[in-house]
Image (cartoon, rainbow, N blue to C red):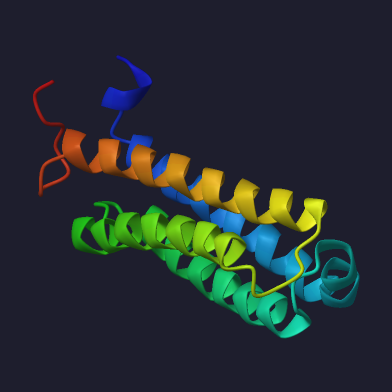
Length: 137
């Protein structure tokens, strides 16, 4: 059985999403001042998105731990992850903040991560049916 065909694929992706958001959110909250200085991003933005990421991580844990993945919620997550990536790029393109090279890397790393996760989540949704059974490949 391929990894993509595994019934645990979609929950596994949600666990990875939860872990990445928890780590990023915790870093942004624990080191807000230092990250603001190093990245050129405003401390309130880092703190606000850090809180949002931790709240989202808790929701992702809920979704990952269900016997049957909540498809509608995960579909919203896919849209939200693509939206986060667009917002990251828009933030950098806006020129509103004097973002440093490290800040650009920080924001682009988040954008890349959420695009990869969204694509994996979308793949997992396409491979599953409503009842949690695997769809025909």
